[in-house]
Length: 197
Image (tube, rainbow, N blue to C red; front, top):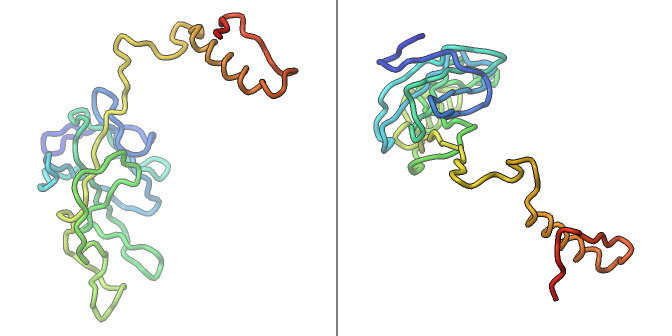
């Protein structure tokens, strides 16, 4: 167990991608073939202030990952990714830029346009080979951890008891009789439904 700023960090899993709330904590997983380090940035409820940065501790099959048992659904976050800045070779890693999780399920806050979002300085003599050290976090929407669980409550999911409810059989029979009306040879009567006229 690693502790970053009082937040417990466990190895987690490389799958599923994105932030996955499991009812006890959140697994974070981000693909990057060439990154040298990935920091998970946690923000306050409004997304206006970065609270802490946590280095994702594991790298498995080109996926950076970590599990935070102290984080809950609703948490706002983003990533800062470290790696080579070599535009000639197609690498433009710039840890000064907060990145949106490409696997996020929700975003919070507005996007505010500024040229600080570029990894290079607009107007620099080196053009897009220059390097911009300005932080763009204030203009980027934050990713949000989402609780995707559907709690059925007292309701049951379809086929929960292994049988089809008779209403489903009637619906199937009704649809089949409607679609087979034009070809009587394909009509299949449903013994579970009563025909209403």
